[in-house]
Length: 150
Image (cartoon, rainbow, N blue to C red):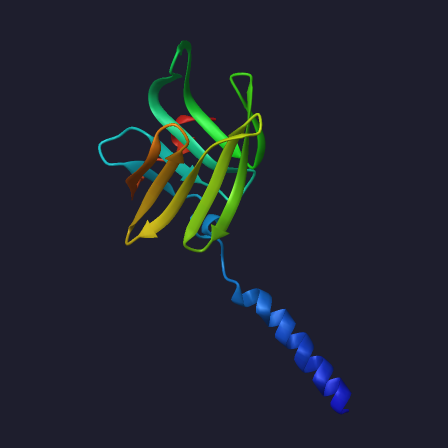
């Protein structure tokens, strides 16, 4: 009887430990949209295939290639083909209060992007190999990626 009681207690302890982990950033912010103050850029998070979607609010282009313009971009973990270029995104952290992912091109790290809550806002910190570190405050938006794209 003592063995059965011990086994049941151990089983419950391990079963409950998964519940204690809590929700991830992408669970917590699933379907929420954010913008930079006075900007037409919209960021929307999802815990689906595309974890991060971005609407640029007008035609944006890649520096040096102004012929290819875009408004809507979606990012998934793994390989993404953007204008024929393969970029790889890897989620490094997906915890309740932090999302961190890294972008690489042909095995070379381009940089990371980190999102952390700050009160009712989110801080977006971009660290680029070429441009250094930049932090921006995002505010909640009533508009979403799906309002403009898809």
